[in-house]
Image 1: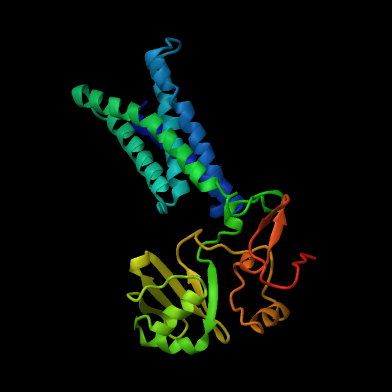
Image 2: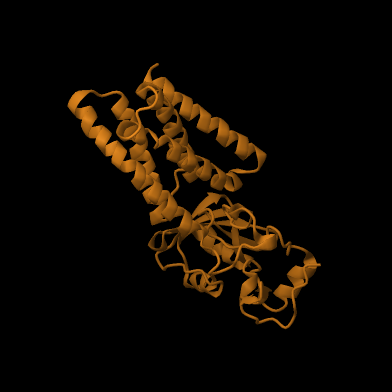
Length: 299
């Protein structure tokens, strides 16, 4: 059977598995599961190296067919997991190695003689490096305890709290004139961002996305983009980079008029970083800063 057919089996399998988990929950929640399945498939596919070096059991062509299927399955799942949007050096490392492994594997199947031998050695050398990259990526992404331990009620998928296009804070509607005018961000707007612990450089530019209701702030110096959406009497600032914004609002609803009044009467217009004011204790350890004079009661 053609190597192209074997690789196609793996690609189709990756698409089916991805759709199954994404439709059951969401892409954000399914990403971690897809990466685990992909890594396991790559580990199993790497067993082909043992057949060529140590094990003589079974036909080599049979091992090769399953190697092609499982490797293409695992690599495609890793690439789907990344959404082609690596956000950190360890994400880029894994993404690049997965592409190289998939590319060299396909090239080996369709070349011959000297070129094939060179590509095969390169492909075999990349496999363990990719697995190391996946481990590094996983450790970097999952070391959450230094900020907030994911225990008990907080042992949930990352996407439950770190939403794509998450709302960072809101500002007064008087800034709409700045957005309608466009161009460079004013000093007042930069100051307003700093008041919410968000850096906005003096070179940031404003462009209109939807007349009178939506604008785009591009801060090339900080490699950030923000979408401004007009609400009833406020302007909401959203981040366009997925999983960058910390928020408690997905589970802890703060959008009732009573909660809004309690915060805004004290000059607090951003409710998306509760630990800045409310200290909490988890497993006997304190997190956050206690600046408010009341205890949080989840009931």
